[in-house]
Image (cartoon, helix red, strand yellow):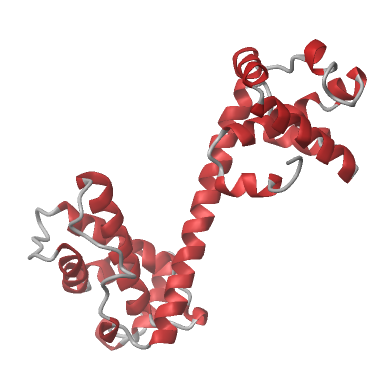
Length: 242
């Protein structure tokens, strides 16, 4: 039960309560700040926004809800500054994805910094957003990687057990995976059969058949990373075996 009238409660206190699961507070914030959300969305779309019919407003409302859930006061920006940036980014992403057009330009290229509080605050909020985006992208990569591993009858969990214990052995396995990927015939064989061409491979690498078989799962796992457009996972292999 609230101890203060909602109208007299500081915004940051409302945010905390909503983050703690107070649904009444969350609904109060979503309803009270609809004009703010509509204004943010309108600035991106460069037109009047009908809160009852425009999809962009729904995206903005969802972004505002997300901003409430993810806001942290210790990062140095006010909530409304953070929320405005989240709304702007999400609506820009939506327009680019759905309409495939230039209606919205990058926030970094056309954003009125006077509407925010100060350059340091802008930089901090942008940094927070970038970190959140990278975390989301990394998570998506891992989820996709897990699905790709299943096709080779591998799991993410077992890679911990099959990973070579010594660094030179890991580098050797990655080098073999890279060679497999760079060789057209080997690459097609692995992608089709979902296994290593052991008999042919042993003829062109400087490791024994026994070693190849022991490191088979790890080599396949690294081959998958090389075969996909994984920005973060490929960073792990950068410079190894090249």
